[in-house]
Image (cartoon, rainbow, N blue to C red; front, side, top):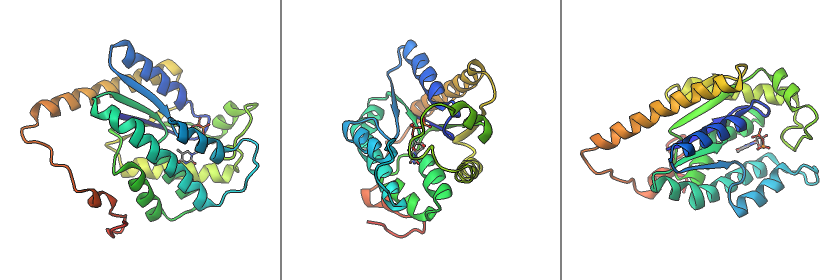
Length: 234
Ligand code: TYD
């Protein structure tokens, strides 16, 4: 099962990702906690290029998109896919929705490109459940005060307003997958809500597995690269 956490910088999602991963591990469930960008040796190097806290190098919006995607492609191949094959739970701090929200709504790159690049990087892998931790921009800014901003975090309020709009549009588009969680609640209350939803999803997964009468037919690879307009991207 792939669980992803999303939200603007300072929303508290990393703490929640760790809490749920620890809780599942305590129950003896193999659980991996990874973050994006990062999670493999190569992806961590890409992370230092793209977030570049020293603000040394200019990056075009397209370069930025492709670096996030390159980091993800390696993480999926090297870590996430093998873990899911072993039936482990993978908790990922940010995934494809971040790219739609930040590079799409924040930077203004065309969403059709972003969906194609996301599909290429993930081979069409979609999270089973996503928690979008929703906090007002002002609260997120307050929480981040004094924490040294990286390239993305030093963006303007307007940029983050667009990112938030992107997240809300995604939540509306995928109500079955994306759960919007009120980030104003206490750490414990938020964790409790998330834990209940994860248990529910895991129950569903087990029920589906036991009812699967026919073998799963895997799609030919090329079909996973169909872009948003239905055009073969490869
Ligand atoms: P990080 O320090 O991990 O921030 P956070 O703790 O808020 O997740 O930095 C990740 C930054 O990269 C964050 O500002 C969001 C941004 N990002 C994108 O712009 N696009 C992406 O596809 C991903 C994965 C992250």
